[in-house]
Amino acid sequence: MRQLKEECGVFGIFNNKDAAALTALGLHALQHRGQEGCGIVTFDNKNFYAERRLGLVGDNFTKGKILEKLPGGYAIGHNRYSTSGNNLIKNVQPFFANLHTGGIAIAHNGNLSNAIHLRKELVKEGSIFQTTSDTETIVQLIAKSKRSKIIDKIIEAIFKIQGGYALTIFTNKKLIGVRDPFGIRPLVIGKINNSYVLASETCAFDIIGAKFVREVDNGEVVVISENGIDSFKPFPKIKERPCIFEYIYFARPDSIIKNVSVYEYRKKLGASLAKESHIESDFIVPVPDSGVPAAIGYSEEVKKNIELGIIRNHYVGRTFIEPTQQIRSLGVKLKHSINKSLIKNKSLILIDDSLVRGTTSVKIIKMLYEFGAKEVHMRIASPPIKHPDYYGVDTPDKKELLASKLDLEGMRKFINATTLRFLSIEGLYKSMGYEKRNSSYPQFTDHCFTGEYPVEPVDANKKSFEKEGLSFLSSKL
Ligand code: AMP
Image (cartoon, rainbow, N blue to C red):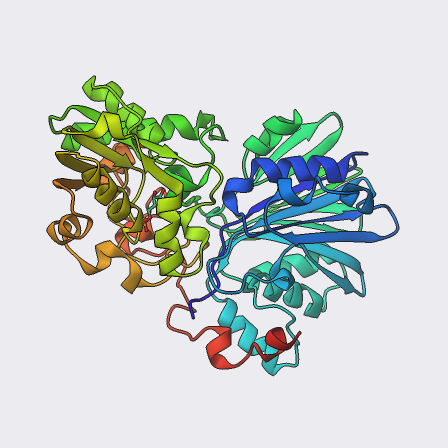
């Protein structure tokens, strides 16, 4: 079984009479970050309330009187994305625990690269885990800390964890936001009237009419209370290295990162791709939706038309959401169909943002040929993914990554494209506004392409909890 990997969306709001409803809306805007489960925890100055569900926010948090079960002016929320078999309600966040300092609710986006290591230590010391999620390790570490103040407990815990994490925490009438020392996973601060809001991306502010205030810095802990925002920077100062994949694939195109929309970044990736590897053809076809901004940038660069040669059915989730390869393959067919009358006898440039296992490309190219395409020139708006991620991107095993198994020609044959080209690393950095990649301290976490990990992936060769037999509790609960 593959390790649990998560790329999720988090949200939090402080002191607003519509806290639960606004959180549901924020999570709805962040739905692209995780579709397996969602949850909201609220606080009404006395008690905590939690509702967690499998499935989409819109299907769950609009039904019946669910929001009435979430009273109070304080809320955090979570969208879950996991690709392991553990699509179980007990793994749906926010997690809640009663500490001697009071209740604490916590939502996590990312993945801890030493969670297995820490969990083994904690279990040895007597901790009992209720879930198979790495996030529970954080809860256990906070609970075990001997510090008296909750903020010091949290800081002690984050000194022990490694990897990618953006956390929203609610405890003791404080909304706390935490971002890992490299800022691998995103977290932004907004404001609606007098209420501060935390979210994974700015698109969650737009839906509720909140204004963007600023990003949480890498390694920063922000504490939002009646007194406003306090900032703690417990780690030694280092330059940030955000995950390049947020720009390439994860974030919603209308989200803003560093004053630039993700859409603009993706168009630039497409334009660089065109500069590097354009080939004559009848028109450009994006793989919807992920390839669309790059295809627009490509098309503008070479002044060639885009045609919607592939139509996407929007009622099917992302292909990766499905846990087995067999269902994933079927998922691509359910998700994409060919605009037949357009394709026949045409030679086309097919653009997608990334190639991971090759599942999408194989299916789409096969369908394009079935409907009479003459040539399919596949262009990928990011470099080949050769290395697994341990900080929250779903690329778990090296052996599943097409580019780690095959060279360019091997990949071309595998997906059966007429030609295949990827954006170069140099092109990637240029598109992001840098002259070149800083080889001694890269501007981004780009280990998926380069194999240079910012934090040692301690768990890389460790067996998962399940294999170690440490999950007996979870399977029986
Ligand atoms: P694959 O079909 O395995 O080659 O994956 C590539 C497709 O999945 C592309 O269309 C991407 O937009 C999308 N994709 C890339 N990375 C991820 C990820 N970590 N999770 C889900 N989908 C992804």
